[in-house]
Amino acid sequence: MMKLTILLIASLLLMPIASIPAQTTEQYDLLIVNGRIIDGTGNPWFRGSVAVKNGRIVRVGKFGATARQVIDAKNQIVAPGFIDVHVHTEDVFSHPEAENFIRMGVTSLITGNCGGSVTDVAKFLGNYKEKPLAVNVATLIAHGSVRAKIMGLDDRAPTQEEQQKMDALVEQGMKDGAVGLSTGLIYVPGTYAKTDEVVELARVAAKYGGVYASHIRNEEGGVVDAVNEAINVGEQANIPVEISHFKIASKRLWGQSPTTIGLVEAARKRGLTVTVDQYAYTASSTSLDSRLPGWALSGGRAEGRKRTADPVTRAKIVDGMKAELKDRGFKDYSYAYVASYNADAKFNGRNIAEITKEVRGKNKVGDQIDQILDMYDKGGASMVYRTMGEDDVQNIMRQPFTMIASDSGVREFGVGVPHPRGYGNNARVLGRYVRDMKIITLEDSIRKMTSLPAQTFNLRDRGQIREGFAADIVIFDPDTVGDKATFEKPHQYAVGFSDVIVNGGLVFDGDKMTGTMSGHALRH
Ligand SMILES: [Zn+2]
Image (cartoon, rainbow, N blue to C red):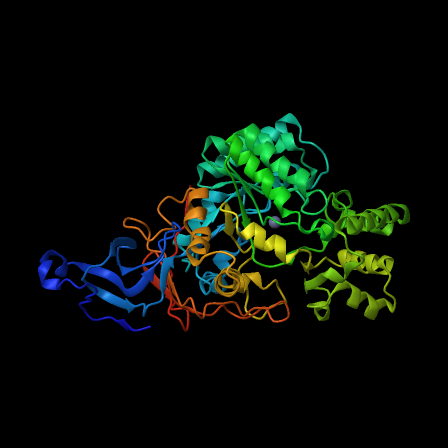
């Protein structure tokens, strides 16, 4: 991209600049010219310029002006910076460039998902003043973290006093700027909560205008009940519901996304705000621990190891795992790939069936379960699970209430074999699903990455190319944009983005991060 730091007259319109003298004296910080603007609302692109001053978009349309810096978009798309509503970036202040996100156009992160967040929201969000970021960050306050703080990892209902303490922590988090409450009802300790515990916390978040974002209790055979539970929480607590990484992760139920989508549609028809987010892959990524029955994990790994060492209890765990496998419609664990195993990095990138065969010389399901339990005992692993059907991914993407979100963390380049979504998710939607497969339009895909997330999480001045809005802007080439990261070689940045601007600061120039740290903490 050509960037001129000298004063420059940009003339875009047919009307001579001399006829609008008031504007020729205007001094903008940044002017983007020759772009096709997609404003984030879903409206079709239009030609025009975008002017930025003091971190805000101050003018959009056809006009001539002067600016300190001019970017020639060269007929590419100029869109709002993408808002990734589902990330796990509690460590973002240790990796402040968030390069994997920036380089796929993501300018705002909403972390604290799946029941795991900081519990001191004020401190977390306050960090950015001393530790500047390239990216904006907002957070949810998470049920699992709050519960662990008050009750440890116990598998039981809270006492009244404990519930009140959890309510108070959620209330404080909301007052400090959290955008809502999250749950992770498959994880320890979230999985030990009954619906009423969650409803009470959701009522607290609702009082402050928050959202209820849930990694639901079951994404496999029990997905219908789990979607209903999330909607039920929303109706009882009178709070908007956001169902995280919406999917059908049981091979047995592939093709049944119309059923779960129907539940969302029916709830919306009754008047409840329900939205969902999705990553654009047929594989998920989470812990190895989550393959074990929830009860076996109670109290943490030290307690869990006692259970795997006791023959009677171990037999029950094995039965539970076999039942889960059947429920998912898989014959064995060849769908389960190790992303990162600290105890032995040579397992990284390989599936449980392959590993079992190598380590044990035999490969029945029982052998694979022994291998998994051995790895659990040795500290667990993060995993990639190839569990979804392509038709369901596409069908979910087409829904008007679906957002695009990565479910990723900040990546350390070259470390481990993580899910490629952290490098490619948004670019993959724009390349594979919009340009190549035409599943949704370019404008609609941008809406799902910008104004819909902003509306859902109450980020009122972001997600659109609109006067008065924060100047989070991406420029990309719709003909070349795409993801390079694969399951085998995930550490590859997205391509096709020539400029990424955060609050008016150019943080990525098409080649490299510029070192500009113009991110903000976003408070509800
Ligand atoms: Zn999750």
